[in-house]
Structures are given as C-alpha cells and as structure tokens.
Image (cartoon, rainbow, N blue to C red; front, side):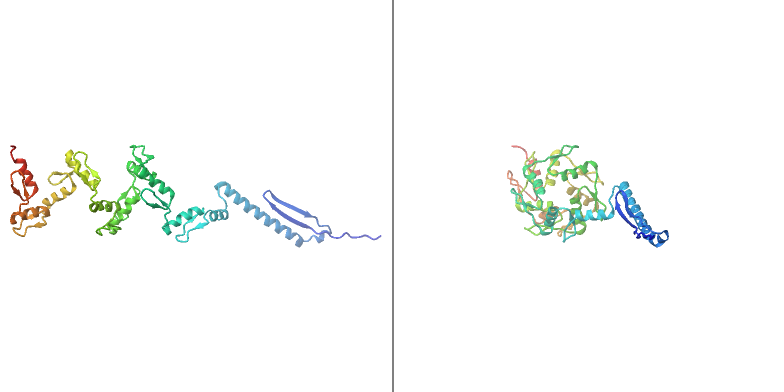
Length: 335
C-alpha cells in the first residue's frame, strides 16, 4: 500500500490595519512539527511587534488630541499653510484670502481707488471712505455712554473712552510720557527727532503736526473760523479764542508762583516771569534802559525820537502808543 504524503501548505499572515485594531488573515501551515522552525515564525513575530508599536503610537496621539483638543503637529502645519497661502512679496505678510492681499498691496502701490465725491480725498478701502463720508453728512452713530458725546468712527470713540478710564497705552521710549492715541505719540516723537514733515507751500515753514500747518495756512488765507459770541471778534486758532474768552469771564488761570499775580494767558505769565529773573533782553542804545519785550523797547525809543503816531480825534493830542491814547480818551471830560 502506497501512502501519499500531503504537500506542505505555506503559512501566511497578513496584518490589516484599521481604526478598530488588527485583522489577521492566516493560513495554517500543514506539515511536520519539525518543519515549523524558529526561522519561519520570526517574520510573524516581527510583524506583530511592528503593529503593536503602531497601535501604541496612534493611541498616544489620539489621547493627546483628546486632552488638548489639538491636531497633530503635521496636521496643524498643513492647515496653517493652507490658511495663509497668499503671501506679500514686499513685506512677507500672509493672508488666507486673495481679496485681503489684494487690498494690502495697495499700501505698497499707493493705489487709492475709492474717492470722496464731496472733497476728492481718496482711500485704499471702501470702509474707510464710508467712515470719511460721515464727516460731510455729520452722522455720528457711535455714542459715549459716559458723557453722551458722539463720534463718526468707532476708533475715535475707543480713544475717547481712554479719557474716562485714564488709560494711556502708548508710551514714548525717550521721555516716558504716555498718550491715549497712537497718532498723538507719533506726533510727540517728532519733538525728539526734530522731524517736521508738514511744509507750508507759501512760505516754506515746516511743522511737526498737520494741525499746526492747517492753522498756519489761515495766516496766508486770512481765514478766521473761530468767533467770539459775546463781542464777535474772530480768530484763526481755537486756542486764541479760548484765551480771548477769559477776558469776558474775568478768568485768570495762570498764576505767578513768586508774587501771586494772575494772568489771562500763558504768554503773559512768561513775559511777567522775566521781571523776577531780571531777564531784560531788550536794551535801549540811547539811555541803556532795558525792557522785557521788544514792544516796550519800541515804544520807549519813540520818546527819544519824538515820534507820537497816535492822535486823539477829539482834542488833537498825540501819544507814543495806543494805550496812552486810550487813557487820554477815557480821562477826557464829557461835553
């Protein structure tokens, strides 16, 4: 009787990875026990070990994401790359949308496609133009809940609110002075640098702030938009009007710390302080008498030359200055 030895069947283990674990498809190896050697089991053992490492690593990552709420570093890097795919070649700034970088590029090109139909001023953004238009329409939709003051733009309201809270987040690194607005800090820094970028096209005089240039231009144009209601007198600067109003209300806010005398304006106090410091810079060449300002010296020189340009229209008397003429007119008896 002949016995046929069955052919040896090979053992094959295939490890399939899924989120739920390992799926192993095995084909048993048939044959003699001595043929199932150590060498034939080694690939299976190594494959299982590799799968164990992969499972442990994946579970660690999932556990980390579950605790921190984060994706893996690789996923985050890919996401950031996709979110900032539009980069400015001028300054390196990145944007997630093409429209945003298109608007940004106008800073470098100087393009301002949005123009105000009222005054012709142009802007890089439509939103900025809309905010500017409120200046012409006098619309002020942003209201301060503390004092009721209204503003055309939200940024101006935010800066105004710092006046109530006392917050001054913008500090000068040169002198330590703080400001509520970044624009005010930038203008202040020009005092230290000596920069005067705003130049008058009429006379060439330069200024650190645009507001000072605008006020200066009124000298050339003769414009005086600030009018005193009690007397009707007009001024080119708001500060001059405020100083003038103290005459009507009798307010003298500037006090000399040496003698206690009070003055309407800071300029008058400054001139007065020269008396205490003996700073008499204007000297008469005829008699050596000194004065604290040039106007007093000019009036004094008229005594030496006999000039009396101011004449009273009632009596014909002449005086060296206008103030003496006023005193003469006041002292004149009524007829």
